[in-house]
Image 1: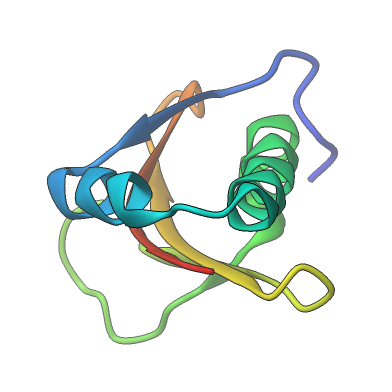
Image 2: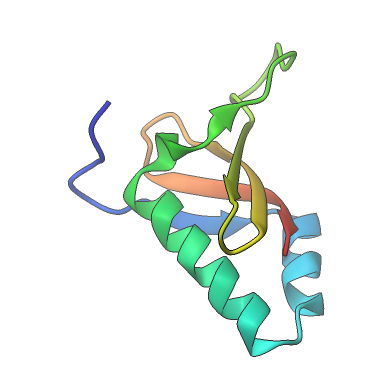
Length: 88
């Protein structure tokens, strides 16, 4: 599927928001920002996580260069990416 013509909004779940608050270095924040921009441009960029039967499909995006991992799901209309977990 080609990238969407409009960027998706990024929202954070409670645990992801706490993780975001714990990031202190500018390098970590910049790396996460680049990963979130990539997700907003193409929410389908991550890989589906197998074994998740109910609710929205949980996906994992890993940026090997920036050493960032984001677990997220996309809303039904692909307008919002809700981040559930951040690892930088």
